[in-house]
Structures are given as structure tokens and as C-alpha cells.
Image (cartoon, helix red, strand yellow):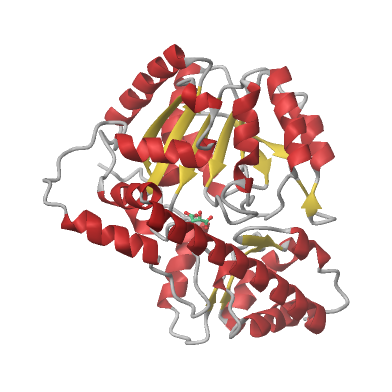
Length: 398
Ligand code: LMR
């Protein structure tokens, strides 16, 4: 019956994660998947989340189905985190939000909806982007092309090329964007550059689909929402997928949300109904536990303050590790200009020059990166950063 099923080559990021897990070498360094490790090389259990877990587990409520759109208190807390406590879009009732199965679930539900209601639209993703963006959009039936984003020669954002290309797209083109911590490059736009993008989106009537998986890890929880809030204030309609995997260290709980910013409250109600239907015919309703943890943290002032401090610790540590990597590379391979690393932010650094050396780095040095040259700086710590820089220098000089 299933003879015609072809073999799956595997996902480039998830396959490496398994290879890393099975690698017996104690000195191994995981810079492949986007997982946050602390200075001791552990995936942390956030203290704020641990406290919330006690509260949630103490509840004697039975586990019933959540509504199709998830836990209403979770959705409200998520909206305030993303759009701000005093957001006009929220007070006008223009934002429809559902709880989703991680950020990927939000992307897929959003992509399905867009495909259904904009069947003539094409989709654009940045060059480069997270591999799964293309897979999810194509899986929903979109023809997917790229827009200019990164100058591979200069190893920096190429904003002029990006703006020029966006300014030529047909109305209602779906444009996938990263509001902060661009994955894989770590190259973000400045506030002034986002303003230019907002203007283009409005003028050309583009249909932005934002993917926010790293809020707080570039400049801070508020600062990283600059583009989202500017777009909402402009009156543009857009979609926003967000994930709590990294910033709550809750990868396995699959906590995310999809928000759709609409023209008015009446439209938002109709849009919410379609979001609910898309969920019902897909997985019916999201799981409850992880969302309860996130909502408890966000809505309990002491836990909220504790969590914000924990996110800030992650942000600062990754920044420090990127700087330490830069210093190590300057020491071990001074002939190469590594200054581009210092302009990058968030969980990833991007050095395409290392991509072709992935196999040697894994085999000879037990250093795992992905084949694009993306480096998850959260896998670095004071114990392994210098050895990693040396490994990079060694393969490049060979
Ligand atoms: C990543 O980019 O490494 C993460 O978002 C994990 C994933 O699912 O690919």
C-alpha cells in the first residue's frame, strides 16, 4: 500500500540534534539547534516557571478540553506581552489571538488561513531564513520565493536591497519577517529601518507574517517588539506567530500563539472564528499544561518580575559569549575579519564561511554547527568557547 512513500532525508536541524545526543565524546559542543544552555551547559529550568508549576499542579480541576482558541487568560496575557499594556490595537479589539502548538503550529495555522483566503498570493521569505519557513508555507500550498536580506560578501544585513525588493512586490504578497533575532543570521533591522519597512508595507498593501521566537533576546522584552507595535500603530493588517520555547525554556510543552491584527473589532471577531475553525479541523484544541505555566508567570507580578530577570540573564550571557567567540577568533585566526560577529544579536551568529566545514568540525572537533554556518551562541560557555574558536580557526586554515 505504501510502496510509493519515498524516504525522508530528515530535517537538517533536528537530525543534527539526534547525532549530538548520541555522540559519546564528553567535550562535545552543541551549537546546532536553537536551544538555550546556561553557563554550566545545562538547559535551565527557570525558577519562575518552577514556581508556577507548583501552583498549576496543586489545582484539583479536571483536565477538560480547552476551547479551540485555547485558554482565554493565556491569550490575553500573550496579547499584552506582544502589543503592550496600553496598546490601542488591543483596546480597540482589533487583535484576534489563539493559543497554538508552539510557534510552528502558529505558522502553520496562519499559513493555512492565508492560503485559503488569499489563493492568488505568493509568499516571500528572507534570504536566508529558518528552513522550516519555506517548508511550512509550501506545505500550505504557497509558491515561495525569497527577498534580499543578507549580503553574503559583507556578512551583514543588506537593507537597501531588501527595501528595494519589498517595494516592488504585488499587493497582498505574504512576507515572512523576523521582528528580532533573525534566524539564522542574527542581523536585525534598526528602528529607523523598520519604520521604512512599515511605510512600504502600507503603501504596497503587503501582507506581513511575523515570526517572533526570541523576544527579549536581542535588546529586551519591550525593545524587541518595536516593529510589531509600529506596524499595529500604522493600521496595517498582519499576522504574528510567537513561541515561548526559548524564553520560558519550555521546548517540549509547545507553547505559542497566533495573533491577527485586523481593521476593526467586528472584523477581528470574524477572523477569530476562521482561526478557530482552522484549529478544529487540524488538531481541535491546544494542550493545556504549558500554557497554564506561561499564563501563571505572566499574570503573577512576582513571578513576572523574576521571569523578566531570567530572560535578561539569557540575553546578556549570549551577548558575552558572542563577544568571547569573537575575541577567540581574532586571536586564533587574525587574518580573517570577524567584526561582523559583533553586529549580530540574539541566539545565533552566522558565519557562512564555516558552513562547508561542518562535517570536519563535528568529526574532528565534536563541535556541532549546521551546514549554513549558523552557530547557536547559547551552546558556548567559558569552558568551551576558546576551544571552539580554535576549532573554527583550524578548519579554516587547513
Ligand atoms: C532552530 O532554529 O534551531 C529552532 O527553532 C529549533 C527548530 O525547530 O528548528
